[in-house]
Length: 556
Image (tube, rainbow, N blue to C red; front, side, top):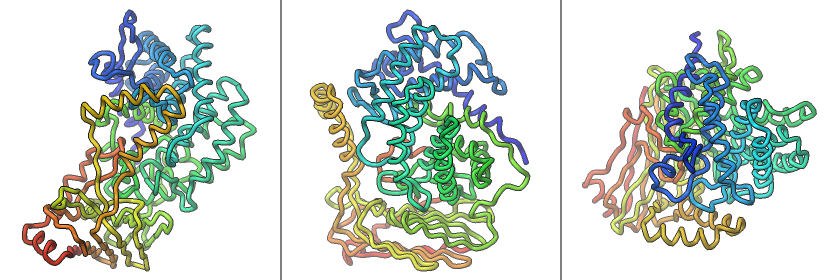
């Protein structure tokens, strides 16, 4: 078996010049150490996004680890820039310990405060020997303030990966500072976090299961697992139990074409976080099988690499690659088989997630009924995605855009043996876009309310409801049915009855309707599978009869 470990290091190190280009490296500048180029150089925004400072972790890793072909190892300049970035992080902290990411006075929780705190603590441990005592004290005070903020507050809606992202730095801060009050806070958050895992293995992401973010949760739990000291064996066992179930669920969405997850999930994320799977590879052979298949996909350009991610999320991915190289688990000759690799047929229905994995002799399919009936079918002969149906999307005569692809809807779902069906109403797609007037009003609200942490949280809840959860039921019904035979899959998409007239309609293809910043990255598999766009004749039939049915038979 080819050892692909070095790919992790290559994918990470090749982005270090980009990270350094995002940083103000002029020690005489007021913003020395700021890694938000849009702020300090372009001057296109009115505040520095704190999450940009996460980039220091990748720099610290490159400085301290002799990765293959690493030109940054032990270079003094890299150390100095790391310290500058950490100092700038301290300087932009709010009085309550929080940080801003998307807008001023956001006072973000897990992302800009939690995961960023983890990155800072990780960088501190790597560089501690060379840091001045005065800065150490100031830095650790900032860390404790951030950790206490994470312990005191929460956020609107349940995003389990965010809770894992908060748990990790609270414990890390306790370990670095020795402040035992943080351990008490950690225990409280830990009990709460465990309640977000379903017995099927997935963790709740707003209103469903999302394999992409599940891999992130496994990664954060893996990092926490490595940090836990003696005396915390019970929590280690708790992590092992939770991760084993999560890996088993996630394995169904590591596809034959070496892509992962995507629109099948509640938040349509494509990313795969490998670090946790590498960490748990020795304990759980299935984790290693998933990690290996996804590493092959990364090597072949079939996963989301750091290079195609925007600056905001690049900073997460680079250290994830470098840490995966460090924690790489040596592969055995015969890896455990993934669900689609097993010889026997499979019809696995996750009753709570309303998701299904089907393996037959010639094909593998995954289906999400909770999302209106999103389905992907892969040929086991070629490994290719041969059928991709993300539901129905259309435009009505009154200008509304509506779709069957809405998770959390009041759908009637039936699954019996080889057949499944979902019936319900289509949902509006309400895409919110900023305007100069809206942004002016928004900034005034931030100035008026954002100074207070509680008011800032209420404002954030309103924003999330507007851009993520505002879609409403429409007076158009749909019914999608799926049948899986030994050598074929039969899919039927019925639209109607309806009181609305349509001007455009598309059935199938790759699309998503929910606002998720870490989604919609291009994947090569998009080029191979098309959609059915309704003809004028079909639209007239739908508008006259008030219903229409489209059927597909995928044969092997």
